[in-house]
Figure 1: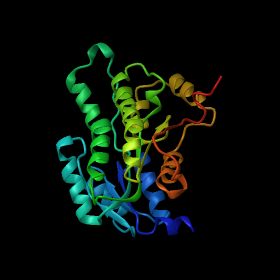
Figure 2: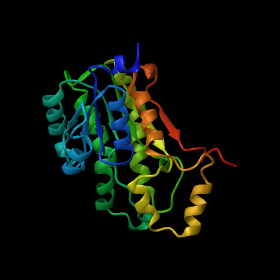
Figure 3: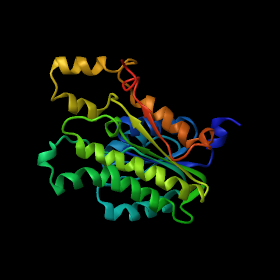
Figure 4: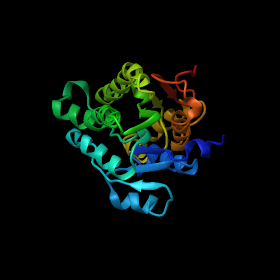
Length: 251
């Protein structure tokens, strides 16, 4: 059976769908024949990207407010019925020295990176909201595996997703569903561009040199997310996959 045939009738929720990895993933899923619920905060941008795309359903939402995640899941269910999976790509990055960490700093990063991912899985795993063989993919980060000065809160927010994934996998398997994480290294994205504004030319050159296969693209991650969503990965769950262009393997 073709991938399009397997994808027929399955709708995947993609958060952070207005840019970067989320946008690349949503577009790849649409090209593969899936329906996609495209979610981000900027409704105008979502409409400009997906407004004329067959199979795309636009549901703008601010996922940084944990109390509203349940309402979001209800809105998605009302719009498309049971989903075939989720790719949680929405996230924020921040650098704060450990000695300056405050509860407000933790909340600002954990709300969207961690709480939203966990609560989305919980909300969509309620009876009737997911289809048989549903696949959930959470986007972590290489930062959870390799420290970055000032990035301890961000790293912790992503590492928490990976811990959640391995513990939740058996529960989801009992309901014939799967969950996995992808931990990307540096990819070209608006978030990466903003981070580079604080680097000098030598630091940028060193960053590029630390990736033997070069800096990644959002599509590099989107392609693997689409694989994990698909039935080709039906025997894979509870795992975190580091995609880093050889960064950790370099000499």
